[in-house]
Image (cartoon, rainbow, N blue to C red; front, side, top):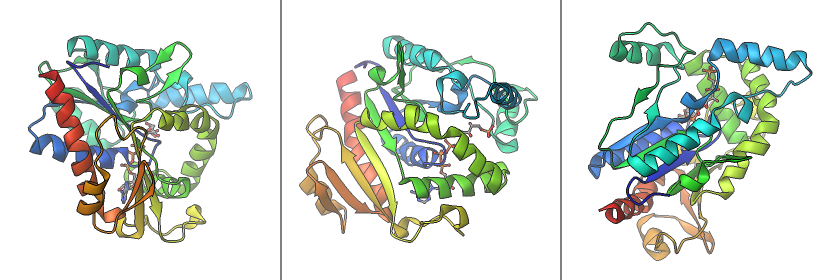
Length: 296
Ligand SMILES: Nc1ncnc2c1ncn2[C@@H]1O[C@H](COP(=O)(O)OP(=O)(O)OP(=O)(O)O)[C@@H](O)[C@H]1O
Ligand SMILES: O=C(CO)[C@H](O)[C@H](O)COP(=O)(O)O
């Protein structure tokens, strides 16, 4: 934790919607004139796409069919913790990008004068000086494993966790439409990742300050034949605070501002899916404001 250089981490599984939430944060940052340094969690994968395929084949040849992007063998948890520690102490550190698609490769090649391909990393580069906070978005912002503990450095931890059928529908659609994978290949990936999902992804949601859980109000009982992603209006969002007092959460105010919301537990408010952006703004903007005030 750092008063001077706070870290906000949005964490969730692949397809959960962390990039979507990142976009909502970018609006908050723009409106509040906050200058963040943004870290994409996938840049802390250990292997590029070709190496990962080889590492998976190697693991399979030893009888391990569950080697995955969710676990410690294929990610640099220690390097991520180092970055959080260094940023908290100095406001500096190094970042890079994992290029998922042609569009991402093109954008970074243009910026760096390189000819990197999808599935490769950009070189490590110094993060710009003078940022107000670090914003991490990805799989492992609150991870802890052995001697490594990223969660302890995070000032505001946010979990993005649709119920699992919806998470799978979101992943299948996004990976198919934007990353060109077949439905069968995506289901194989989901199955391969399951042990690491249970051991390394879900425990993080007990270390977060706030979880946003999207719950569909339409039938998603067979996610593998779904024809589309349930829309915001076809869902509710369960928002659970681990300790409402820590951030001075004012539930009567939230209930008043968020039409059709209700409390389901003393620390949990449920809102219509279409109100997610507004809810994030009225819940998170004051918390971020406080983090930055303490800094001043
Ligand atoms: N609240 C939401 N309402 C409707 N659709 C959503 C919502 N959140 C995410 N989605 C959709 O789900 C898909 C996956 O979302 P997104 O790309 O944000 O996932 P992600 O967690 O960043 O995945 P990855 O870590 O693999 O990049 C996208 O098609 C996105 O539009
Ligand atoms: O888990 C993921 C995102 O969080 C991706 O599956 C991982 O980054 C690998 O990406 P790609 O399939 O594009 O090589």
